[in-house]
Each structure stands twice: as structure tokens, then as C-alpha cells.
Image (tube, rainbow, N blue to C red; front, side, top):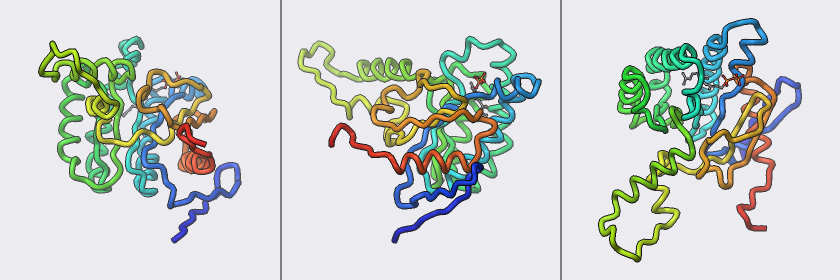
Length: 251
Ligand code: FPP
């Protein structure tokens, strides 16, 4: 059955999403909160607060569209370089978000998951994340991966170290590791690679996000700042993805 979803976008163009070709995994670099706040003469943290509202909308829409995984880059291994106040505000927002939104997310079947080394986050963040993950693990809706203290390079090194420590005969000269073996040690183990990586705010770089997993991801950029990112923008990204020719190295 060919099921087509028609939607009017902000720019008044009619776009059609093919429900039979919904990406399994969407990853988003939620960029532009600071610039959004600056444009409005507000402190940067107001931009992050507005960014949380966008998360709320987008997670709901991803769930409705039947997307299986949504990975959100919320705090990178490099974001510790930000002023202490901003880091603290982000950590507080995270705890508030998990506490306030838990019931709604759970009711909608969202699986709350995280990727990254959360052991460096404040204890309250760790506790809320672990609790939210434990209590939603059997849900059947979209898996929301919050990338926290996440860096692609750190993930690869962490995977490598875990793999080495699991090798029983360390003196053997015949150890060969396959891509499949290695992937089991990544934070995203068992998940499909992202089909599409979305970065709003006009920047066109990966910023250490999902370096291993992005081998064949489609990239989608837009000038919209994350707090202004809407369901229509998500639809546009999916539509563009669906109209690309993914050859995975073939012809
Ligand atoms: C990048 O924009 C955004 C971040 C580093 C943080 C993203 C965090 C949120 C959207 C809210 C908190 C998250 C959760 C899960 C509750 P930027 O600040 O670098 O913007 P700029 O480039 O315009 O300065």
C-alpha cells in the first residue's frame, strides 16, 4: 500500500513524505541556541530553554512518523570548555526535562536512552538518566538517544579499550577484529547507523558526532536556528532524504 503524507511547509510548498520510506534513524546536531537568544537580546540559557521546547515537538513528531531512533547531540566532550554557568544551566535543564517530561514520554512509548560517558555528569543527571532508561526500556516507540558528554573520537577509543580488555589471549599474534565485532563496543551497539544527520544553524560540520556511524549517512543542513526548527523542517529534511540516491558505494 503506497501511503503518502501531504503537508504544507512554512514556505507554502506542498511536500509529500513517503511513509514507506521513513528513515529508521535520524540524528540531529541541535545547534544555534546561543545565536537565537542573542538575536532576541536574551541570555544564552534562554536559547537552550527554547531548544528544549523544540526537542519536545520533534520527539513527538518522530514518534508519530514511526522513526525508530532519534539521536540528539545535547552535550559534547568539548562543551565542558563553555563557561561554568552555562554548563550548569545545561545540566539543570537536563534534569528538569527528564523529571517534567518523563510521564508524557513514557505514555507515548518513548525509550529514553543516552550515549556518551555520563559518569562525568553531575550525580543528579546520572541518576535521572539511569532511572528514565530503566523505566522506559520496554517501551515500543522511538528510541531517544541523548548524546551527553559524547564525542565520536572518545567513543571509538573507549570501544577499542573495552575490546582489548575483553581479549582473553593477549599474547596471541592472530587476533583479527571485524567491523561487526568492533561495533558491539560502541554506544550505539545494536542500532542502525543514522540515515540522515540534520544540522540547523548554518554550520556545515560534524563536530565529532557519530564519526564511525556516519559512514553512509546523508547530511542535511539548514540556516534555521534550533529553537525555530519545526515539524515542517523535519518533514523537509525527510522529504529531501527520500529524494536522494543512496548508492552505498555501488552504482
Ligand atoms: C548548541 O547550540 C547546543 C548545545 C551545545 C546544547 C543543546 C542543548 C539543548 C537543546 C537543551 C538541553 C538538552 C536537553 C536534553 C534537556 P549553541 O549553544 O552552540 O548555539 P550557538 O552556536 O548559536 O552559540
